Each structure stands twice: as C-alpha cells, then as structure tokens.
Image 1 (tube, rainbow, N blue to C red):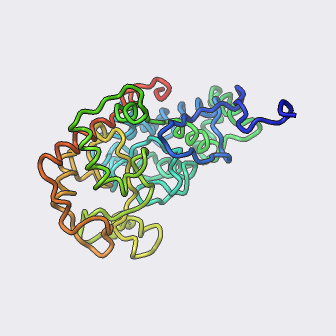
Image 2 (image 1 turned 90 degrees about the vertical axis):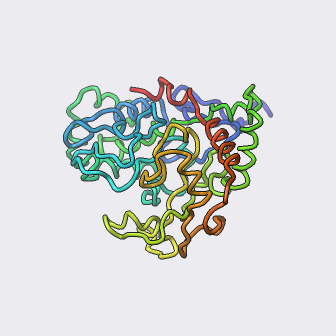
Image 3 (image 1 turned 30 degrees about the vertical axis):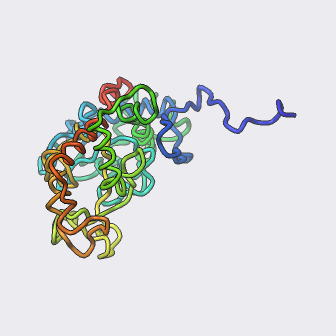
Amino acid sequence: MVACSPPDDPVPTPETPLLVREPANFPPLPSSSDNPATTAGVKLGRQLFYDPQLSANGKVSCASCHDPAKAFSDGVRVSALGVSGRPLLRHSPVLMNLAWATNGLFWDGGSKNLESQVLGPLTNRDEMGHDLVVLANYLKTVPAYKTQFEQAFPGEAIHYATIAKALAQFQRTLVSADSRYDQWVRKEGGVLSDEEQRGHQLYQQHCAGCHATDLFTDNQYHNNGLDLVFSDEGDGEGLGRERVKFDPADRGKYRTPTLRNVALTAPYMHDGRMDTLEDVLDHYSDRIKTSPTLDARLPAGGFRLATTDKKALLAFLNTLTDPQFVTNRAYRP
C-alpha cells in the first residue's frame, strides 16, 4: 500500500523543473502556481530582459537599469537612461530573491506581483515607453521569439500577459544566498571575524526589525526618518506608500530593501540620496528626522552609534556580498 501511495513531494519532471532555488536558511518559498517557472519560460524571460527592442526606441533594456554585475542595480542615484532621457524620480531597486516578495513591489508597493510589476517600466514614458500591443505585434514578427513563446506557453498568443509571465519567471530565479554570511550561518565553512560577529549582533539589535530573516527584508513599508515633509510633486512619488493606499498614515513609508549585496548597490534609499554605507550608518546613528509616521522602532535623532559600532556593522554588511550571484552565467544573456 505504501508503494502505491503518491509521494508527498513528487520529484520534478524535466517539464516541471524546480528552477527557483530554495536556500535552507530562507523562509518557505511562496507558491507561484499561477505562473510556475519552466525551462522554456525562464529562457524566454532572460532573452526579453536583455533585449533593447522592448523599448520604444530600441535602445533600452531591463538590464540598462538592472546590471547583474551590480547585483541588478544601476549604480546611479536616479537613472536618466530611459527613452525620454529625463531623470526618474526614484532609485532603481535591486532584483534578487523576488520570489519571496509577497507584499507588493516598487518602492511604494504599487504593483501586486512580478507579473504586474514588469509592465510598469515597459510602458512608463520615461523608462522604456512602449505600447504593449505594438510590442506584442513586433515580437510576433521575430521567428526566434515565435518559437520561444510557443515552447514556453503552448497554445497561448504572444500578448502582454505572456511577456509579463516570462519576465517574471526569469526574475524569480534570481536567488542570492551564497555570501560568506550564508556559509557561516549554514555551517558550510564560512568564517566571520570577531568584529563581523559583533556587527551581526548590532544588526540583530538595531536593524533586524525591518531587515528581517535571512532575506534581510520584512517586505513591509516604513518611514525611516529621511524627511520632515513629503512632496506630492511628480505624481505623488514623494509620498511613499500613501500614493498607493491613499492613507496619510502611510506617508513617507517605503518598502524595506534587502541588505544582501548591499556593498555593491550604492547609492542608497528610495531616491539614491546616500552615496555610501557610511552615510547610511550616519543617518541611523545621528540624523533620523521625526515626523508623524516615523517607524516606532526608530529613536528620535538616531541610535547614537559609536564609531566602533559603525565599523563593526559595516564589516558585517560586507559579509553579505555574494560573488556567485553577480557572476552567475545563468543570469546573463
């Protein structure tokens, strides 16, 4: 009877591979049953991610602002590489471990999931600026894409929905979990110095409330004391989560970014205003500004960190760099 019972965890077949890695020190992987990753879907998504023809002028790809060598960030405060040439109002967020992002995307949570998120840059007039119908019609004329879409989504038309599904599948495979910290916490031979371990203790004390679990984000929205007032100019981009929720209690709140690979992803904050990690630590130490929606865990003025504390925290943050992630050929064109 046991031999006839279906296994609790079926071994994946070649048609339904486990393409999204599940590190042992991560929380359980949320289901993506509406758009499960397949080999063909991920391959197509990677091709689309690096293709500048997805932009109206044929010069801007997703990778223009999400460089794998920079942990899928772009290294500038706000990008002006889009089709309009105008600077954006927000810093380009990093792309990693997004399979665990279950509480909205963009800095203000303006998209529900990866499938909806990818459509934003494609159509934004200052980013890729394309018309989705025109884009789908173009892809139908490219023989290689026609073949790839049929393999990835048999029986489905080339449509903005399948474009979004392919891009989302690829982005869900971007898993970073091989830093020295990971090797230490999983007991895989990683070693942290005394100073780095002290930095980890300080991180647990001061940072882990928002940069939670080994994802180093709680996927929530917080006002971290950057400003006293919040501008509603530029379609309300400066209002934070309030722009989406229409609730003044969310004013100035932005999504907690992961700290993974943080040494590679300068500048920092939703608008890229801080050039270095030292600037970030100085902010949390002495420069927190009090406003009505300031996160309750942040003390007025700051944590008053000693110089040795900042040095230890910086040492720990550098252990979160994952060289394999930024060189992984599976993530490159």
